Image 1: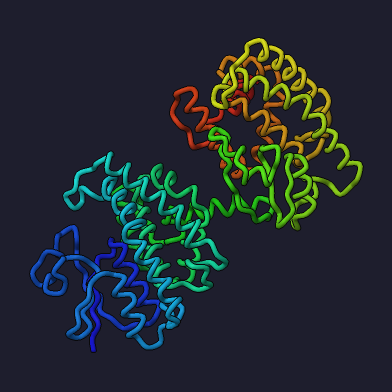
Image 2: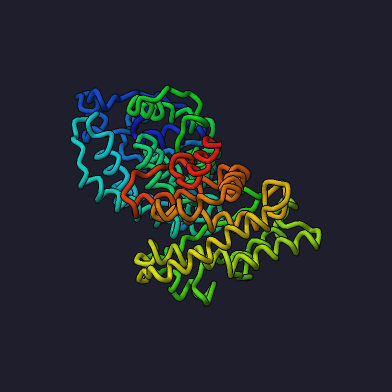
Length: 483
């Protein structure tokens, strides 16, 4: 009995059905229905599906539409389909059905609305609608959050804690893959907060490779057309969503340490919530939970991670007792010198109102004195030996990372304040750049939030690239040009 699948590969549900058939070795004929050319409205297609939608199926004389019904039918009707796709166990199957039902009015509603009203609408005669796109994005963000907190909240790489994919995984992942066609800033804004989702997409791709990549070529070609990009046949380099996942992995594995970043929004006072105070009773970031072990204070965290994590290079926190003691001396000095001056000037000039703290010009002046003295000490004591880093080292330590990140906060200062404070200290500026280069691209990635805040405070365009966005690095470039 012949099986025909009517599909347009620009359709998320159609791609899910095609991938499922290919992965499971189901023999079928793919009949292309071009939605842009409105072939879904032709009488011969409406004889298959009176609603004029793809995907649709004809299995001999049996006709079926709606992708979830098609996927479950094929899983049951096709010999050799592995049980994990749509388990014979009644309760496991019911759980998969619950995800599929939820998908219709949540992820799909938000995803289709957002893509339609931002980029794809004009292709099918639907005008761009920013208000409708904004509403759809709210539904979409809520749906992605629910995927992480509910459907991916068990052990296992896939939905419902499964170790192998189901038809629900393939359906929902194909939905999210449609975001490839979004403008880059929209895609980044929507997906970046959801690291578990990005990993789950990649796990699903790997589990269904090479069919996943092959079926998505049409979508990636459409992305190239819409954004006037070169056509790239290689999924690895053409997929922006894959690139986002790769960046997250690179960010997390700078020292081979696997971790989950939990955002604690200080502006929203999330550090005061009881659940966070169970981690850190002082309500401060950063804090870590390593199994049942909880730890706060950044220097203690850095030294603990350097010791507890296999593969961390010795230069970060040397095993040599005297070298380690020297690094500890820098870190202890930092608390009551550079940090006291730096935090004081930032709070009393620009950051205070955001945190509900009034600015004080007198306090800012006093803080600047401490800060200037501290920067002078860094140049005359801590950077007063051969080597690009503190204590004359040729490679960075946790002390370099801690102190440089402190100074990077001055990106937020008013330009005249930043120039006045930092211009006299050329060795400090060079050391900041050396530390950035030694930790690139992670340094740039982690400072994007800071640059976005700077853009917000001073009403300047957001710069995603560290090189043009950083006023501190621009000061170094100016010094080099002058010299």
